[in-house]
Length: 429
Ligand SMILES: *Cc1c(COP(=O)(O)O)cnc(C)c1O
Image 1: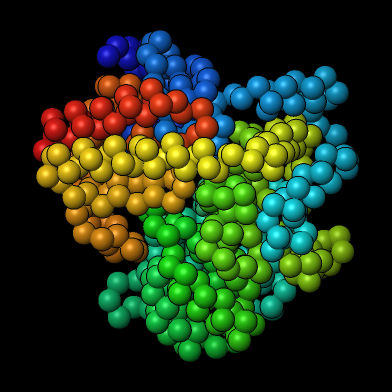
Image 2: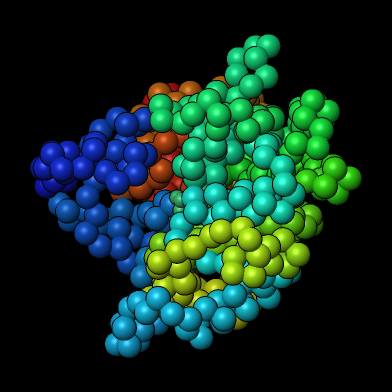
């Protein structure tokens, strides 16, 4: 595989951009090798600067439910461009966008648009704090909620119950307000609540975790979280930036049958443009400025171009009756093929999947939380990733990411992927 041009571009990029990338995981650090510079995406495929073609399973890290550049999103964008790309004043499409979100996700009575998933979770935490008057919140080890200071915290080791920053630049003060619990472990939550009674504003989690591989929360766990939040007056926030409109029309909350107080969205909701949203109970959302005192704003929030793309995506999601059935069929076909390969190779790597998001952990043990996820052999994943890439399959350049299937993936793509999966593993094991 010739990646000469990508290599040169990467070298040049590093002169002007830290590490050559605008988001760290793109640099391929955890898998080794040089990142590919992409020039074009269409359907299930991406083409790099040297003209190599790949079947893409990243889908821009989640947004591309319909593959790259579907005609209905492209047309919506072109139409809006004719009329101007930003006004900083209300537009009708913002109402349509809010309307369709509240329709698809019934727990969301009111919603505000922002520009990224990070902004959505950040604002949701502020809303919960402003609403309850409490400052602390509970987050789970291994769940990712974007890069706001108070999310970049991990559990302290051993007897240390206080969280510690995972990045320089995050203050101890921030860490002190973030309480760390274990995913799928209700006792770890109960313990924190007992120790911090009447001080907790929110519990935030990915109801189907997609940032430590793919790990669904159990229904019992979520039911207990819901009960605890009700009895303690804590705001339950589902971070559905990845799972929203991905695992079902109504997101993970529809699949698992639990209603949060607030939800956050991103990725699919922007149809490939930079968009996020947070919303939920009217009672909480009406505490936000300008109706209420909780400040939240954005120069480009609800941007017409972003709304045009996002609305086109959500409208397709609403009206395409076979969408989730099609995604399930494609995804289970791929899963079956991969399982058959593992059988043939006598390997029992732990495979998880919810609809069109899945993950093969390089461990044979069951994975239910962060501790069990990090048992994966990440070095082996790196070699597997590079083998797959050589065979034209572009996976996430890190073990603890989801593999996304879109409606654009054809049977031929899936068969080619299953074959590459077999060959890659066989060459490594
Ligand atoms: C991607 C992601 C975010 C952050 O979104 P950005 O748009 O990258 O800021 C937050 N939460 C979850 C669950 C995500 O997957």
